[in-house]
Length: 251
Image 1 (tube, one colour):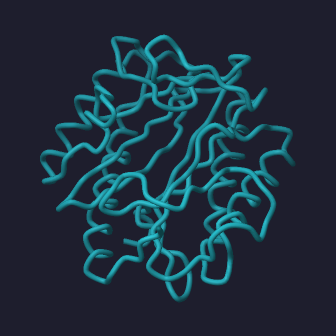
Image 2 (cartoon, rainbow, N blue to C red; image 1 turned 180 degrees about the vertical axis):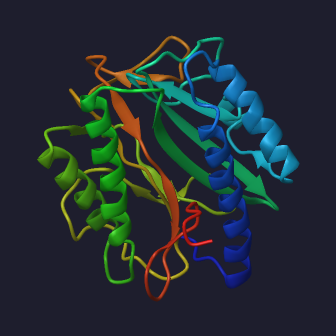
């Protein structure tokens, strides 16, 4: 069942998602060669606590950390560790928040120092795919219109969408209905309605759509170990244009 949010619920979701967005903005300042991914995780947890929020991921299905740190060929769910970032890496940061019982969720992929032109292009393709999907996050469109926008752009650029993981509704639970695949034909699935809140998250691989789960049972990597990028915004469907709850641009 898809839950439509009331105005007061939307207000709490705005706060929770703004905290997630602000946390990522602060984390960006720490991304440089030599930093440990565990250091990023510690910073993220302290930041959320200072803002009166709780980490949504820590303890979720026994995930051990606040932040997901997925480097290079890692797609999602990378576990922070003593690994130090190196010049030319890319790192995906995925963070979830809980504020007054309501969830926020956002992700971004960032360069570490100077990266290759191929890696820059990957980030641009994934980022653009997200925003093309958000353009379809309006009443009258269907869930798969967002999915199709992602797949059409990514594959048109000679890259691959990850099919094993999906975006999702969000509210009083981290994962609610509907699921939002990053592929599929247009015009299918639930009709978008005001009050829906969706976490839209294209994951884009350079070389294959196939994935492998590592021995830690969390980290998903590309089947051919090519680079992967992940961008995510939480978006509210309104009567008019989409409201990106995890964007700081309009505030």
